[in-house]
Length: 72
Image (spheres, rainbow, N blue to C red):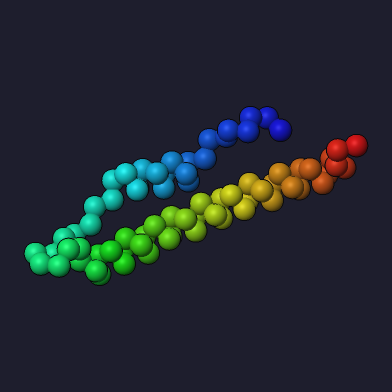
């Protein structure tokens, strides 16, 4: 395999999102619950995209490996 540490923009997107996410606050009682759930859904969608990209990468590597006939 070429370089083990390949660029994965999905991971960068998740990290960037986590560093910049802001939650709406309530005047009394902490955070706005609806806003928190909205942010959780947004993060879940980002993770779904990252998982789909990783699955495609894995399938491509697996296909390449099986075409080559293994590690003979």
